[in-house]
Amino acid sequence: MTTQIKILVVTHSYGLNGAAAQLKSVMHYWAKTLNWTVDALVNEENSSRYGEELRVLGVNPVLVAYPETGYQFVLINTITDIEFVNLFYGKLPIILWVHDGSTALKAFRAPPIKFIELFNKCDLLIFNSDWQIDEVFKSFIYQIPRRKVVSISGGAEIAGPTGTQKKGQSSTLQIVCLGSVYPRKRQSDLAQAVVNLSKSHTIECTFIGSLDQAYLFGPQFNDYFKAHDQCLKWAGGISEEEKNTIMANSDVACFPSGDETFNIAALEAALFKLPVILADLPVYNYVGWQDGENCLKYPVEDIKSLERVLQRLIDDPLLRAKISEAGYSLATRFNMNSYFTNMTRVVSAIGPNI
Image 1 (spheres, rainbow, N blue to C red):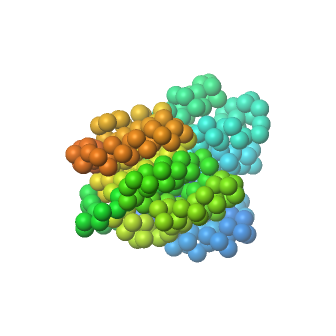
Image 2 (tube, rainbow, N blue to C red):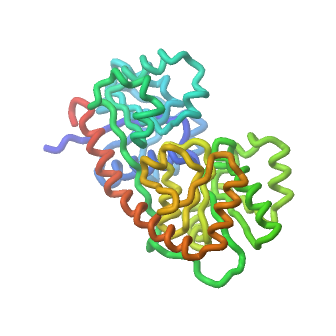
Image 3 (cartoon, helix red, strand yellow):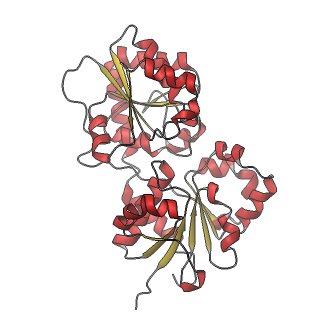
């Protein structure tokens, strides 16, 4: 007789961000493909805002969760919600999914010992990359048995056939940048580089991602963005179909973020055979991004270097083609089936009845 799996998920956001996107994709798989019962603990605001979306995924939004009702484990998503560890400790097996990097550590208003205590209360820690384990959180988890610490690489996919490229003969170089618009993602660096290059080239950049926190750039930058709307396009949070249309009609993808723990969006761009430009973050070496081979990198925050990298791609179509093909080859290694299989395997070891 097959045991019915029932799990509880806790997170602060189901919005337009990478952590939420990864969580929603695997919840959908568990609910629809494996027929697990997946409850999502939400407050009234998130119930109203995301309740219908969750139900479409096969997930049950609940305002109250009772540990004694048969949950196999609780999955807590991101260290923003790490305080829930104390709420469920001793009541349910706890899985903490750590999407976060150094930015979250700097923002956490508690002494280091607090992290150590909370991590030790978890039955499993899931990270997006070995870089987080080896570098960012090493001093917080070194005493935890290695069997309780795993890294699971995310999966990348696009709707429709992969490997498509821009069609047509437009003379405008179309750049695309994916990610919620706020200071950590450093879209302001790319915006300035594009504006500077637009003085000598026909160039546009479309920024895809939630604009809810764009105000954090401050009024000066936001005025700057508006003043150059001829070459800077802010699409906001749009549908997958709209996103894919823009991607398929782009020439270059650029990711200027100052902190990432994996960056699935870069792999998605590579599936469109777009040459990928990355700010040079250590995590990208762990993923397999190699400067000059399957991407181009530049020092974080260095706008002039970013301009030079863009200029290289403008001047050298053979380089663009080489990087596009190699980036596509890398991206195909991170498929959704492997991601779902690996996630299911590690969580299935947690809980008394799984």
